[in-house]
Image 1 (tube, helix red, strand yellow):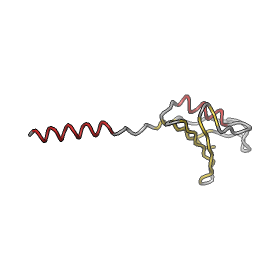
Image 2 (cartoon, helix red, strand yellow):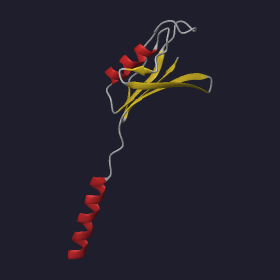
Image 3 (spheres, one colour):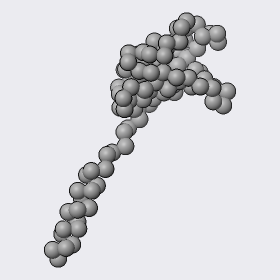
Length: 102
């Protein structure tokens, strides 16, 4: 009986040590963000992981503009073309913001 209790305690301790997966928040779409060569452009499919939707939408707004900054509010942003769609990923430590041009 003692070993069962010890094993159960060990299992609980191991489960507590495993980090929970970060929740990804759906932060919606921001319409008509400005000059992109495909006016009007939308920041669509905005998601935030380990940060707030408010911050994600702020970074998205700042990304749209004439220069396409790669460093916004401390986030490093990169963009790629995937399946005919321009996708943007911005990271800062464990936080990740994603969106695409819609």
